[in-house]
Image 1 (cartoon, each protein chain N blue to C red):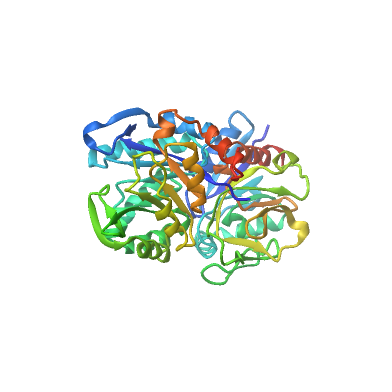
Image 2 (cartoon, each protein chain N blue to C red):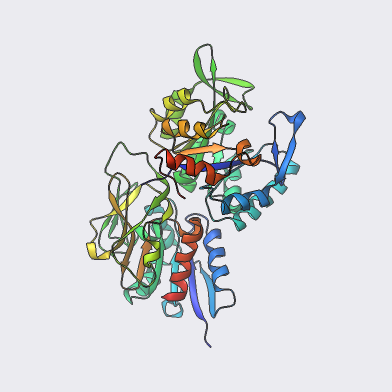
Length: 209
Length: 250
């Protein structure tokens, strides 16, 4: 049986150690192979791609550009292939990012990444917060509804189509915590840091999609 | 709703968790990796570990311990102690720390905070501040409280925020180790003057102390002895806080 290939992009935006380990544990003894993507890649040779990210939108975009990852990633996403973006890896799916400077994103899911509106909030939004599911999905199933995940971010997905929001979270305002368009998923929190529910989410993504 | 974070803190020498800042009476509390694993499984929201004797020899083993811990837990890990230059931060992040805390080095060279947050992002830079009352003023102290600096606590807290710190780990040297409760007055002054998360540290001895810590608007509550001595389980603290209406992750 041909093994499915999972690509984990190292965009030099934070440590990929935890997510790398989580994926390895999940695919152990299963027909999957994990490949770290550090530069140009052939988009048709991957079944799933995961992009974790920390830090700034502009930094991740410019790293991906330098590493020659943008073009094949766009081709991959335009094919509606399976993708999971984590934190900034989710944010860059948008049209524009407004962190530090205005930066063009991948433009896969329409919307902009802007700061929390409420000036009195403690920023970053750091810690465990609840996700509220709008719809049940094969990967983000009902069992995740009202569960807590670990967040650390100051910017949120805004001006997004309602139909692209799978779950939202409250912090001074409602903001999208899981987004989905076709086979493309994005989570604002860090499932790799979110204990058992987080690991279950990654497991579902890998095994059920 | 955002939950209050309960954060056990491991004071580590090489690969052992120890108790006693006073170097004469070091007591080994357990193996760092085992304890980290236990806390992660028993409901800790984050873990903090500090190299309290960061000599050249001990450091290598400590970094290996960070690596081993990062492999067995899946909650955020803050690592501090012995950070003096930018590369120390990079090394700890590469070893698997999610956040690195800087203390004395930031006081001596505030630019380090900016450089670190530009290189790695604010979200992983914690500035640990040790505060102490001196001649009716709240001052910043270093070297475990033995050296009082000229820095006024509140202006330093504001400064570290503007330099790009993502979080403040606030320890009161007036209450630390006494188990009479957090320094509510000092913590409230800090939380009302900055807009970044503040972790309260120093002084927890009872369940009520956790609740009083929450009232200071600190979003993380750090404790060591009450957990290491098994006086309280993390679940016990969370259930208590929940019964008082404080949002916790159960």
